[in-house]
Image (cartoon, rainbow, N blue to C red; front, side, top):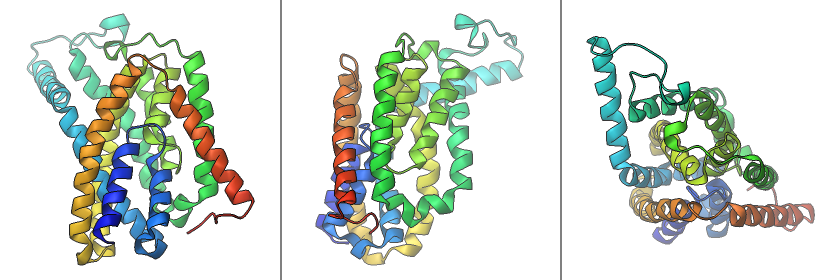
Length: 296
């Protein structure tokens, strides 16, 4: 992989990781157009895993104050419980949050609980996720359309009344199980989780914010796991291009987070739904007419 290819992949990763249009779908196309590693699926998957760490870093930087508040409150509240400075009662906000937990500490628990589904299934289906089927355009195109339809109904059905402070176990599990769909290429982690949040009655910005906080543990775990394997798969000559691509993805990713949260404060996910349907159907037509192949 050369420097130009790495920069292109970094830009694509940064633009699409947080926007609900599927980073995998766009990275697969970008890798085909740039002919990275001559289409070797294992090397492409390893490259994606490394460059994804750039957008993960962007999320940590953007939500640094939130993360610090959550961690601080989590430790403080549980220490107070262990030292019996607080009673163990369940009568918090809307009868959902334990009274002895602050909102930030409770949010920490919701992130932990919401991460369990993808953590469990991700390990079980690890080999499948890393295999060539994750680059199959039939699967990617179909999921582009399926999640678009899901988002459409979520926009119509969802009550969009809950802020982060109103989230309970149901919200964590709804978004957590929706995140499992991200294991299927073309689904989009942010698209799936925002859809789950909207169906649970969350406001758009709150759903997106929780979605980004929830994806951090999953991406961190999978990224570090893949990083070790990637170092064995990729050549030492790829180190500099990968570093540049990762930095580019971090910069673009930070801007993407800011854009999406600002966008969803006043607007729906409609433009992303339309985009997904157009791209998905276009790919399906190209595949059906044998204009492009499903696999690399």
